[in-house]
Length: 92
Image (cartoon, rainbow, N blue to C red):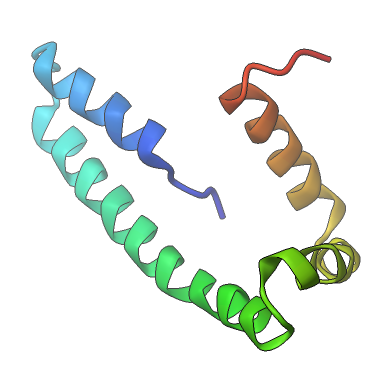
């Protein structure tokens, strides 16, 4: 499932402001993206809670990251790396 970020919402807003012929569809997509982001953020809270239970981010981030890498499939990891590099202007 494609994850929607603030970048997707901004694209939808720009299309609407540019007078897109399907502005209603763009607005619906924008609302959907915001709903997905909100639901996703609520689910992510469990990771932050786990980090706190293990002694805080400074102490437990590496351990949790290593475990997450073991659990995530290769496609998800590759997508994350691509998105992270793009959002942070990191070239190969």
